[in-house]
Length: 127
Image 1 (spheres, helix red, strand yellow):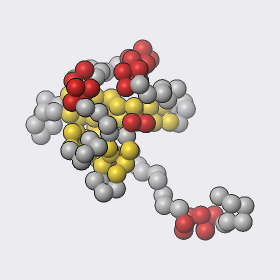
Image 2 (cartoon, helix red, strand yellow):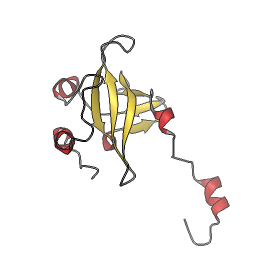
Image 3 (cartoon, one colour):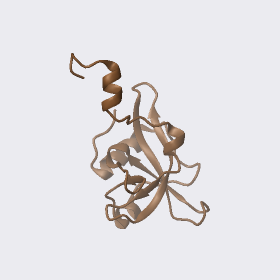
């Protein structure tokens, strides 16, 4: 914000980019071409650093039954206003080989699993 701009002016000229976690959960995830591939089930926050670690995407199943859960590094997701959801450049083959887990099967405190996840996608770890 330029030194001559007041906070009120900044509020009027910059769109808010913050969103509540409850509004992210359930948001659809699309491929670059616009094909829906899943939805955000939850976001994982690093409570000490105050950053988003990754999003957990539900993929597959029918009406939420039989979904597999795929953690995706947050940096891979781009919000697309036109689609009303997040875009991610991940192929079916990448998803089939990606780290995944059953509904309650992921150990959220396992740094080795997180490191493998980020390595798999070639993403820079959030930590």
